[in-house]
Image (cartoon, rainbow, N blue to C red; front, side, top):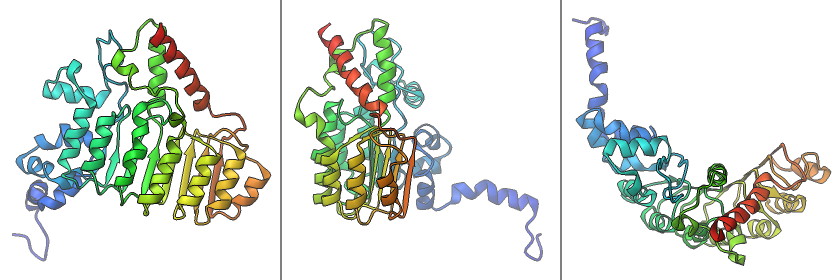
Length: 337
């Protein structure tokens, strides 16, 4: 028997062995909420009965960060491999799902449904469809963080974001742009090998119209009108012009942080933001095009901002801007060819 508060090695091992199983179910669910989607879908439910039960709780699904999608389903007419990325391939293999019938829209819906309306963080996968966007805008009313990684100009469904963003009244952090760009670069390499985009995939691309270029402005307008708690705007490979900057200055007075990576931002646009956003505590611009790191006026204004970080910027347009134009040309060739 242990004495003076000393626990025997055998008793200690017994307590540690049973600790996870006997943990309060809500506490266990909150732990699972942080393990990541791959573990929560493919590992946690199969460990034991108590873990399986906890994995069914909406508390386990409050932070939904979808793994990276390495390519869009049904991209090419003759795409036999249909690999969507490590996680999605494991998911299909584990549950015996035919790759030809896998739907990223259906997967997003099924995961979001597990939160029972309680999701507070949502990081969407690339090539998220209009149907999925409209669904999550109704199914996730309590969102505080939204990550939308598709290009705002290239894709038709990006134009849906301004229509649904106002539903998230509690939104605090918004990330726009990103991971679809390198994926599309890989897909263009496959086009050079003679592959052709499927008709269904071609339909995802936005047609030439003014609305294609003002998505960010329309998003800012809706945030200003409906998302009063939004304090952080993160942009990746997005074109940020004077029109968008003026909308940010005039409509988002509570903005505390702007982070821009790989964006094209003209010098005058940077000045407009730094002069107009009075409550801005952090302005980060890394590897952007349109202004120089050592611009005198920007440096002077930066001294009045609590934290200004600028690295790797050039007065040339960002690579993403030039690449985006090339994509439209190449996609056009594939469509008419």
